[in-house]
Length: 114
Length: 117
Picture 1 (spheres, chains in turn blue, cyan):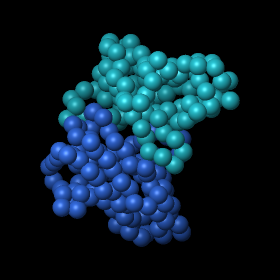
Picture 2 (cartoon, rainbow over the protein chains, first blue to last red):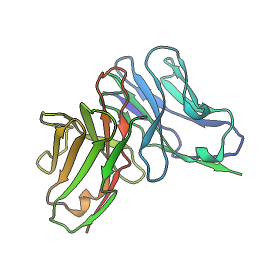
Picture 3 (cartoon, chains in turn green, cyan):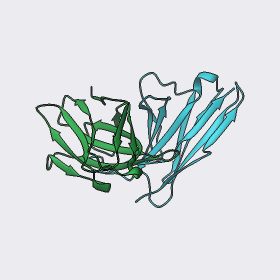
């Protein structure tokens, strides 16, 4: 069985500050890991994914995440927050790839303040 | 990127009626579509996986007679909530993939908000 834990249902940062959204996973096999973003009244959009290649993954909109097996973590970061980054972020895990069953975390609402 | 649409975006119905939600892949052929359910402030929970031309595979605890899924073509899957009750009120999200289970991405629809009175 696989699972994802996202610490912090709400995160607030100032514009220009570092964004750090935490995700820890549990998987019995080498995982595929994903971060999705959901804007109000829109579908989920893939930010980035880890598929056992490089442990530091770069995604869209300046986001990146680092896979740390020893810590079973896949935290999402962005050096400088922008107002447009305000959204809900979901971490997800799959044991067979992005085109198959995904298990999602509970989501983190990111608020960006002036 | 690939676009997935859902219709309707919102629906309000009376208890006991059936509601059909459509999920369409607009610019690609979706060999597999997934249906998720999202409660407020909770995670997306996979309800079922549907492959074109075959019966859907339901997750444990999901009533297949209540949530009827049809994937009749490579661009359309439908979810019918039969005899809906207030506890079925939720946000339903579909996703679609074009195959290649290892690396392919799921493309998500914008969701359908179902309210059962």
